[in-house]
Image 1: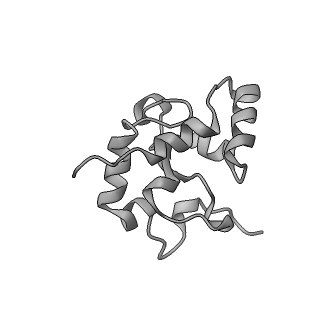
Image 2: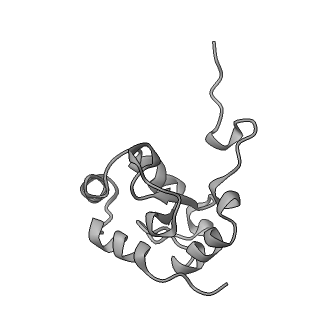
Length: 115
């Protein structure tokens, strides 16, 4: 029986934050070190925040600041491959969160702070 390995535990896999370096740090500042969906910090959520692709890479999304926001583990795992509109409806019904796809995209388009 195969054992399940964590996403970041794959050999020779560099994290998105490491690959993006300075840009990842700027995204964290832009997003106020809070999950774009539920507004929790890493301390409040009990886990590190991750960069979440608004348009998944599997659907042609790029590793660029305007396609990335911070997300806590709960929101990132709950979203899976849903579109932002689908996740907005799901998050309201199942997680009690209220946001719109438009508001999340607007946050991602905000200018990155200077490093």
